[in-house]
Length: 132
Image (cartoon, rainbow, N blue to C red; front, side, top):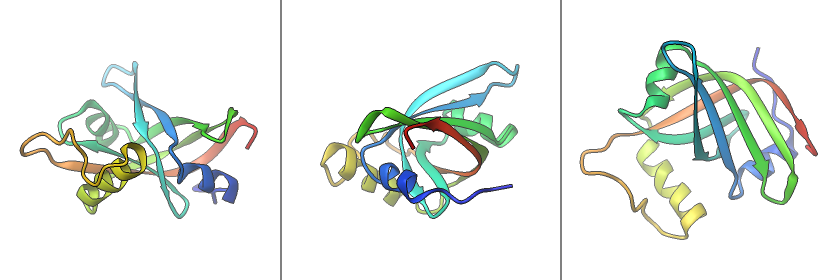
């Protein structure tokens, strides 16, 4: 059952917060990637591209674990347990917005020709962590 995110967590997710995302490979082994984090209401977001392992794993098994360090307090972190959905809606604009936040540039500079961007939206079921 999705929960409401505390305002303190929403605040640090709108900063330059980096996350480590864990999905499950087909054989059940973990797959981890570092991503730029974002938030929309009570959903935790990150952007990726079609063809990568994360969306492939999440379409098969939507369970996800995301660890995010608070950029204002390096000892503070949140671990989100939840269920992810993958969508292309708004993903092109979203990656450019994240590039502005994280790189100070108007356009995401590493977009490959023909690349299809995706947003992963996570409904959080449980939060663990420290210094929240």
